[in-house]
Structure formats: C-alpha cells, structure tokens
Image (cartoon, rainbow, N blue to C red; front, side, top):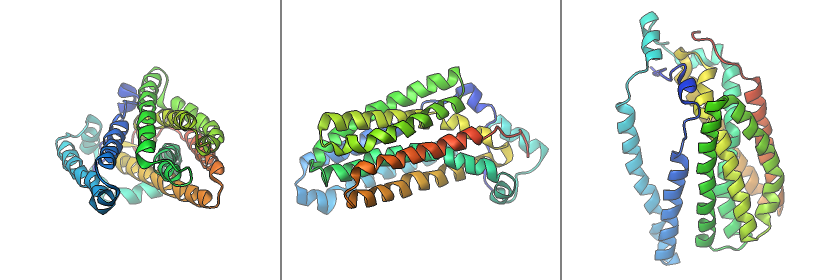
Length: 286
C-alpha cells in the first residue's frame, strides 16, 4: 500500500520550503567531474574516471532510505486512518477519480525539468561539441551558473510564503516562456560571458518553478491519494520535461538548429502555465 502521508496544510505552513538539495547535488556532482577531469588524463577519465561520481552516489541512496524510514506519519494521514483504511489500490483510485488534477500536476512540473536538463546535460554536450569548449571550462561555467538556481529557489520560497506557491509558479512559467526566446541564441553565441549569463538566468528561473512545487502539488489531491498523486505527477512530468525535451533539443542541434532549442523551453513554460492556471485545490477527502 502506498502511504498517502503528504499533509494537508503543509503548504500553508512551509510554502515553497527551499529545495536546495538540487543545486547542492549539482555542485558536488559536477564539481567532482571537474576535479576528475583536471586530475586525470583523458584516457583514464574515459576508461574509469567518469564512473566515480555515479558510484559515490550510492552513499546518497542509503542516506535517503535511512531518512525516509525515520519519518513518522503526519497528522493528516493518521486522521484519515481513523476514519477509513488506506485505499487498496491507490493508483487505480487516483486515475479514476483524480485524472484532471493529475494531468495538471504533470504539466506544472514540466518547465522545471526542461530548464534543468537543457541548461545542464544538453548545454554541456552542445558546448563541448558544436562550440568547441573544453569539458573542464564548460563545467566551470555551469558551476557558477548553478549559484543562481539556489538563489531562485530561496527567493521563490520567500515570495511563496508571502503570497502563494501557485502564484510564484505562474510567474515562473511566464518567465520560462520569455527565457525560451533568449536561451538558444545565448547558448549558440559561443561567448563565455553570454553563455554564463544565459545559463545563470535559466537556472534562476528554474528556481522559481521548482521551489514552490513542494507547496503546490499537495494541494491538488486529497490525503487518501496524495502521496501517489504527487509521485505520479512529478515523475511523469519529469519524463516529458527531462527526457523528451533534451532529446528534441539534441535532434535540433544535430540539424544545425541550436538557436531554435529555446523554443522548447517556451513550449514547456506554456504547458506549465496552463496546468497551474487550470488546477484547483482538492477537497480534504475523496
């Protein structure tokens, strides 16, 4: 049984609590890649060095499991258990009764994943390929730009607590649409400072559409299916924004249309804007 324990009212108490694990993780992961690239020969890096960060991430898996097992059930979930047992198949209940909020949640997640993977994986591939940057130089540019992701998350959290997570997401989605118009030309310019400004702005906007998600997604689902609803929405939206979008970007770059990649961000921003605008808070039970 899925434990539907994401608390109702959590978003009101914590708003868009800064999800700084993303920029911190990016800093350590790419920082380690940078150090390995500087310390190893190209042959050693290709042969075994690139595996080191992935093997080291196993420590985080164990740490995450330990933290999850020590988290107690929330008051909202305990209250729901007092009234009725958990749904035997929460996914079936989610799809049959809450498909609209689920689709809205998926759409609301797309922009943050699209920005992240176009600004990191795609940008690194494009920068070290078509633009001719060394891997270490482009990683250094990305590490500096990553600081703006942390700044965006913190500012989004502050603003969401003063207004609502929904409002910040709408503002961030609108900026994502505008970002898309500048992203492709900025990245394709080949100028280090222009690329840094482009990636810095992109990751700052990502902070605005990522930071409030933890406060907005729980509002879409009643407690009985909240955990499943958040999980499916976040991961399905991540597939669209974090897998399909970079693949499309790579195809455009391969056709010599790297400057058009930003239009994918504009499309992602419009999708998120639509999903957040149409979504409505769920009833406490369903």
